[in-house]
Picture (tube, rainbow, N blue to C red):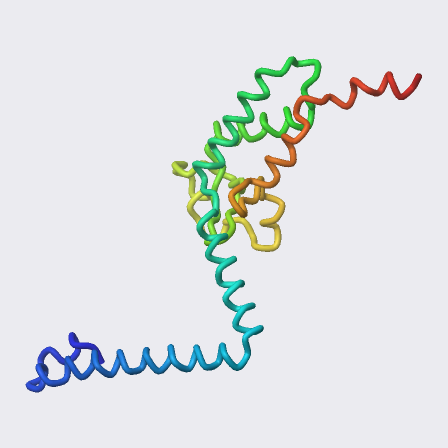
Length: 180
């Protein structure tokens, strides 16, 4: 019962301070019991605190859609500086696919607090088609993994980073060297 619930009560001036007093007593008891439990089982307390700290770090460093767009544009600009004969065809096709998806407006973000997924929708957000807005025609949960373009975790986009690792090395350049 909060102060708002008892606003019409005659004893409002008496109950409201008691409510806050009891709330503070409850939280104090929880804090004392938590400290006692941590003293009894320090390894468990350390693991719980470490886990909570890791989750907090993941949430703090979780990249967003704007960060993905910035990384995509950065890697596109880096690719432009590399001569066409030495570009990695896999990296080029991945960047062209992402560019096509951005132009069509079908890239979406699914943020789960500690991890983000960039995925491909069937329709543009602003499309007026019935299929674009019908909840029964949305992507199914079991096939959602096929639509994922990238995974953002711990401050980076993992698939884009892996694809662009050797973007300036064309493997077909070295085929002639291996045959001789």
